[in-house]
Length: 128
Length: 161
Image (cartoon, rainbow over all chains, first blue to last red; front, top):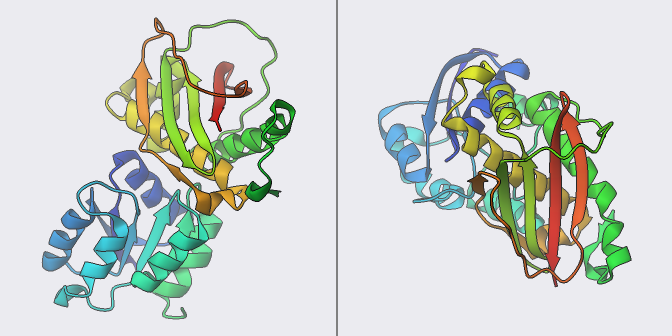
């Protein structure tokens, strides 16, 4: 697997750092990490920059993660970019909502490096 | 795993959730901070001047709070960011709020049926210790006392039916 460009979307800067560290601990080589504080900021970044994967919180101000995934479909440059939701809300209805909105995966906080590896490596390798 | 369709509704019943609250807290610290919490060796009363709170609403209503000293809050933030505790500043409330949020989420996810039926508020972080908090809880607070590197941390769940 080549090194990847990741976009991490979370309104908490501390959580963004934790997700980045989780990716590194999972053995994922990062070429570049872009950060956004909400879905609207993430959409703006994706209109300018190409990334390999988006890791996105659900509960955020301005634009939440579910709305972001829905609107992502209209961003030409981001077509096919996988989105994995990373959130405290681990209910079945949230998982279903996220996946039907277009997310490719779902990780609950707190998370381990092993969980990140298990969910994200297959997506980046094109096996999921 | 407990089932929320059978909420205890009694003091003793809710007390059976204490081990789950303890586990939920320890897991957050282990996974997100790489730190093992321990049961305190003494019950020394130290002013805890950082209080993080998350509200719960739905099948279970209440407030989950995490209290610690400013020194421990800085240590927690530094562990989350991979920086020196002495340099932690503006990130401290963010870090404490996120820890509280994850403890609350992890706790409710351990109770079958509650995950879907209970929503969490955004976290609130209060600093200072010269205040009294009154909650309209209907049951005695569930409390877990732990420590990290010798500094106390108290996790409480006040339940309002």
